[in-house]
Image 1 (spheres, helix red, strand yellow):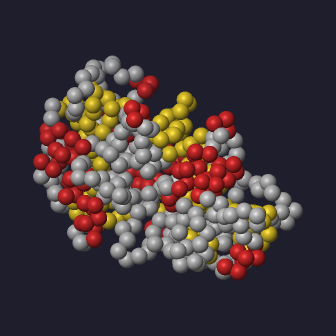
Image 2: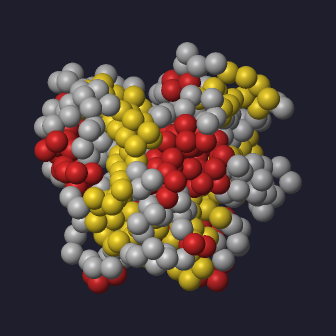
Image 3: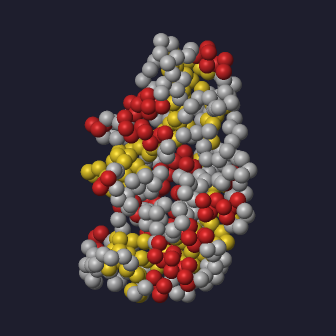
Length: 223
Length: 228
């Protein structure tokens, strides 16, 4: 059952210290900045964050990192021209980092959301990121065993939602949102538009409401 | 490797200078078959797009979830929800489609992408790729989609300078930097030469402003010539 709430702070209520939080976005596209700001205000710490990047500039995920709330980052590409907040934490030994190839990051969350216990994947065979992992040769090709990544919470951004929690996205801001929505115990979504029941074309829904627990509308756009 | 080389014998262009970066990009664009689905890596490989013929039917894939990517966006066309893998604002072409990250990478691993073009620190003579980490102790490792692309695309082209700043060849018997993928690169495009790499080692397709013999003197790997 999806709950539509009025404020981002209500949306993030109950996130606990030590939680694993999946955060959508590729750079700033699709990043749920209002939910992250609310999480900072809400106060949970010692978090494990799973997100493609490790923050850009001073806002969104970078602000959560700067507030000292993150114990570990799981991401594919932490190093960017404007990832100075993460860089400083990492170089001073104040944060753990697990680097995961981008496709494995997505597929491991997909597996979690789809009830798959593990999968054999060709990505990374023979590289340092496969060290210590079980390998198998199937039909002449080598694969590495990859385990699911499940979140306690997912924070994602979408374009529009209806009261049933059905979601549509905009352009490349879709990125990790649909996968993360399936992979967390509690999925929390910020949207820029909330439409009435029946206002979304069922043929065009990308994330069905079964995956969505809380929705909050942010920004100025009216439905 | 799935794309055949059209030349029958090695060509040495001795009457000209080495290729500029722009000329390398143009050569890669020329070698991508019409109608291919192509992913261009961040940085120099992105410039290959500037040389693709509009009538070629080449469809660009960006791993953050789009097919039919158009040129960089400027001015009023900039949309924060529409970027390429380097987070640069881009445009969409008619016929474009959007999809989520798991689908985007399934396209790579599933063998649906024809070509990707990547930069590299080193390529081994058998096509191993090292392009994500220098191994330096203070470097922050960041792999992005490089490992998925390396093993996913049917053909992996590398675009790089042939020699490092210390003068050493970046095509090596065995990579010393941490690997991105094993035996995945099929061709290497450099300012001095276009080379095939793979199970039979390094084969020179063309040279620019230098002879095969001169190149051989500067490299630790054996160079073969194309034979008709």
